[in-house]
Image (cartoon, rainbow, N blue to C red; front, side, top):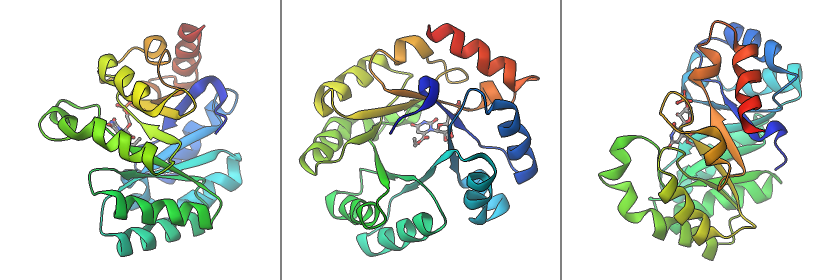
Length: 215
Ligand code: O7E
């Protein structure tokens, strides 16, 4: 996936109106957004198509799909039918569940991102212990897109080592969660940034300033 400025906007706002208002300010800098449960539950799944039609952005749906294979298939199929370019699934559920998501992505000619380790402190309690194995599972399944944390660069680097340089890693945790954009991009292909842009008084300037730090 080609991502403008290696920057994905996490659009976790709670109304379509607000989402459109923010996107309108950022079209110069952003061509890929990530939407998750906050916006989808507020507006319904049709928000994917609405944003795509208005902005021609790539939309990554962060539904962290984590169910049995049959249910995962249904969730992914519905998401792709609604217009998503990519979906994110959890890896801890195991290869059969992840394969169901991967099969759906292939069927719709879309992308799947495999979430390895999360960025928040709680990820150290359970997920971190298995994150390398999750990444290795992705490699064994020929998955090329991954999510790994910007808040722990040692872990991000380790996951990069496992998935290899040809893999595509997107990384959340820059800004509000403490991660550094430029350092993260040493190991990740793109950063995911939410609150430090959309909660800013001037999202356009916040975005512009962030991009300047990447040069
Ligand atoms: O902290 P913010 O506001 O910059 O937003 C970060 C976004 O990335 C937010 O949507 C959150 O749900 C998501 N995220 C993490 O913060 N940490 C993770 O480990 C994983 C994600 C995520 O996006 O998962 C799939 C990529």
